[in-house]
Length: 85
Image (cartoon, rainbow, N blue to C red; front, side, top):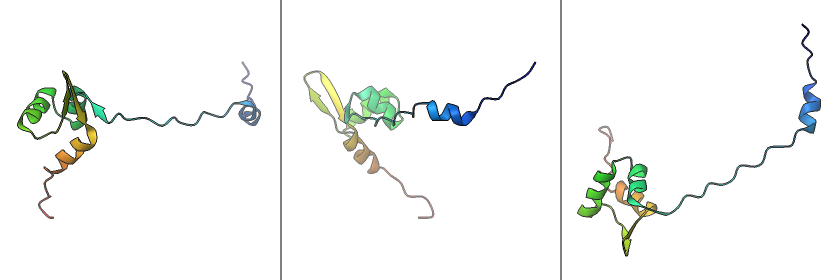
């Protein structure tokens, strides 16, 4: 059985170039379960944070939304320094 090698330069010249990657759009406002996943905690802990006022949120009717920018700022308030710093 013979294996015939194809000319890779010819195949590369006729192939279409790959499409440029599409920018990912990250929503700014998300529901609490999504925000909990973003923060790396369980949804119940996130609900407790909201209840205690640790995490800011907005409520429009029955729809609760969390601003990810404000969530990042709220979590930075609890940043601890390392022992050597």
